[in-house]
Image (cartoon, rainbow, N blue to C red; front, side, top):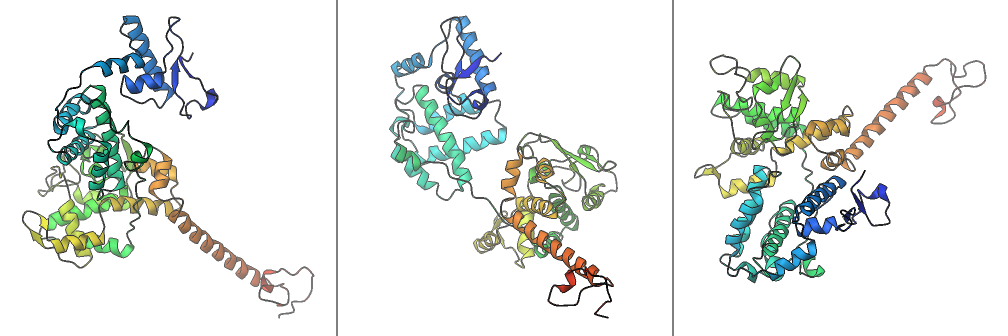
Length: 451
């Protein structure tokens, strides 16, 4: 029996989709709190599913039994009555927020925590030395302007953290007013999240061939072969670069021709969801070239497939990849310092606008356009959480459908031509009286008038 409900006219069947608040059913003849408000104001979390509402309801019932329950209203009054801690700077409170919210979050991966800390550091630099309570909504709008160079997806993450950070500072009594919560709708629009721009970079057959050839053009022949193998692995598996670099020989089954993405190591665990990928014929040949170390010995199970020749982990292929990209476009890279491209070479690379992730995208687009893979199969192979995510990723509503239409038209034209040849070869046909007369079968028996 359900322990939570909603007091709206949407009907129970739509409760999981409508945005109205969840309520706990009456407990001990007295308590039936608004769980959505309680979770947001007391627990600093949002309820989006019925399961989450039931978890919050259970926590409330336990606190009621223990005599420690405090309603959202009482909690607000307690916070309002608490003295404000004056003088703490944004940087000081960012460190406290990290210790209180970011570090202990068991549901957040280390890479996400690292990104949150980078966003907090950016905020701290923007308001260097200023007390947190002096920050106004106008200051935050100006901060948004300083982030104009960021992609929308990056700003969206910062915006989410901003809301959480200032809400925590207010709830913890460090600032008297949350400037974001108190802002007008017009002001909030200037801080709003934007739709992330979808990348549509494609790789032509000629560009791909040049890139593979350029990957081998290194002073160290063995390193060139391994870069070529890594790029080929990206194209054949559609895996993320971090997942491929984290792949060990223990995860490869050459007999059954499968490889297992464990999604555990930092850099190779974006979603944390493991999956199995079938090994294609080209990938099988690539893996055979990597199977042995320089001494001719089979690589051990814990050696990294796309690591260095001795099976050690490679953290990044950025420099080698950028070099190959430039050479594939007949540009010899120029370097300064320790691995930094000259300004002119960097501008040329930016103009080419090709990164390693584009290979994953190109592979998936070609799978869909081939007609042999459907969205569900591609979604599973890419490690996406939903088919809708895959459809958006592959622009299935635009480019792929256009490609499918061209293929469909070509197939129909070929079928029509085949049918025309078949009818023309029949002995009994009508007299040609028009451009499509050959397509009309003769209905009256008689002598072939064309002979």
